[in-house]
Length: 214
Image (cartoon, rainbow, N blue to C red; front, top):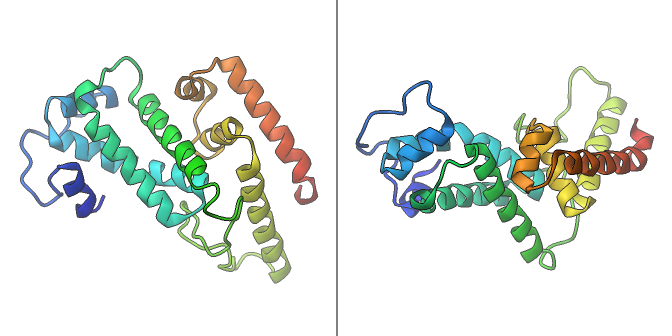
């Protein structure tokens, strides 16, 4: 988390003096967030460091733009910090966090729908997990296999982007964030059976549209 973001949030940067003890081992994230609510700034820094990469990954999968993903991830943590005084540990911290993130991602997509080419995917965007661009050759593959792999990755990203809003969020959470049905249901405020149905329809659509790459 960069210093500019920390100063925007009104939180000292990593080199500043922080009062209180670091979060204790054994505490749940919800309990740590309650310490943030009580004014423990080291607890907030702990949560930022723990969830920064998952938030970047989630936002990148939703926006497919590294700069936008970074901005949206920072906005998530800003909203977490600004909401600290009203936080109630009535649900898992991750449920609350991803609910903020998914709402922010959806609103951003709606707000920028007419400002950018719809459903575009750049081969030059680095993957948030490997840090590599899609055109970096894989030494274990032949030139032809590398091309096919790049085309397949681009097609998958494109088709996921074209899914209906809720299906896209559910797929990103399930496939890339490794969230189970119950977790996704809590975030989207749906039943587990509704999530299973949502994902079934999404994966069936992707299977049909991507059958040439299977």
